[in-house]
Length: 412
Ligand SMILES: Nc1ncnc2c1ncn2[C@@H]1O[C@H](COP(=O)(O)OP(=O)(O)OP(=O)(O)O)[C@@H](O)[C@H]1O
Ligand SMILES: [Mg+2]
Image (cartoon, rainbow, N blue to C red; front, top):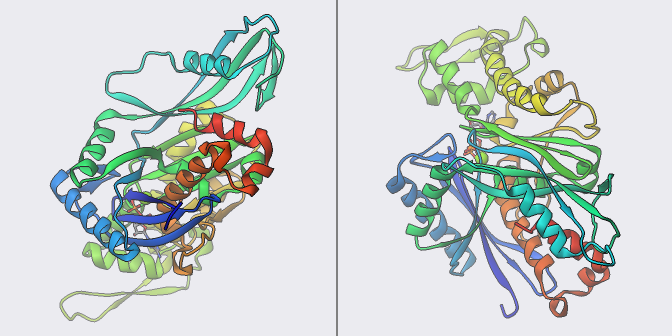
């Protein structure tokens, strides 16, 4: 439709590749036009290991999404995550030399450039520079320093870095499918976009996406991301453990996990029995549910502990009033919130993506947070970067401050 911009979000997951097409009207409102998914091939632990196979998957998903939406898309916003993601805290200090001592955009850019000016190994690249806050002449916690007076401006940022090889292979694969990569977005940021409220980010909240081959984490405090990281372990490792220990096929182990699995042993009664299907026409056998839980819990605890260890090296565990929120298919395993709550010592809940116009309710599910977040973050970016003349009434009424905040968020 005239005045509308079509967008596509693409989440190349280890188990499923998901695409969503949406349109943003000139008022800045987002509508979902189509969403679809296909089993991934050639992707392991969030990284492409076979370009040809992944290309085929991407083409299938994109064609179906385009067909459903009745539109052709030329650019995509793609997510990236996994164990290769490292968030590096950094600061950039500059002097304010103008005679009036007023801080301008240029000063902020300079301070962010200084924060980014450290030696990065050749095999790594910067994905995002996420502003935490600014400090002016020793006064900290300033979110918007424009037009304030001072002599010394310090920016505190979280620099999100990724493996260049993994990122380049992903770009190459998408480009070969005939699409341009408009933006590469950290998957955890996309998740946060549709799962966490502004209040939760202010209160301090940890968001964990348990996928099939990767688990990604982002922590917010005082409204800004302070930590991000990931491990190359996920729900499929639990399935593999069950398959190995019970000597079952992966398909049977997956069925057992979904139907009877529990990741927190103390919540499972000693008496409860579960049915384990057998192959080759053999009669099904019974097994105590607690025994299955004893296979699952150590793997889930390992995943959470690895993330917690990386986080604890840099930050204290206090100040997270919003608790821990779990998304991704792996979060659907029973008992995951109980285990996370015990290990992180904070309340835990499941996260669901917020409703978007045109989106069927069946997609309000922890599996779809990343792909919907990619679409929504791009829609927000477009809204914030619209020239003033084209901004809708609602956005205009939010005044100049909201535009400036957008300017910081999308700076790099
Ligand atoms: N009902 C359920 N109970 C337990 N586990 C589930 C359930 N549904 C899905 N899973 C698990 O969720 C995982 C898939 O999650 P998801 O679709 O978020 O992964 P992905 O995005 O493809 O992978 P990744 O993010 O690691 O690249 C699988 O390991 C699957 O076994
Ligand atoms: Mg995923």
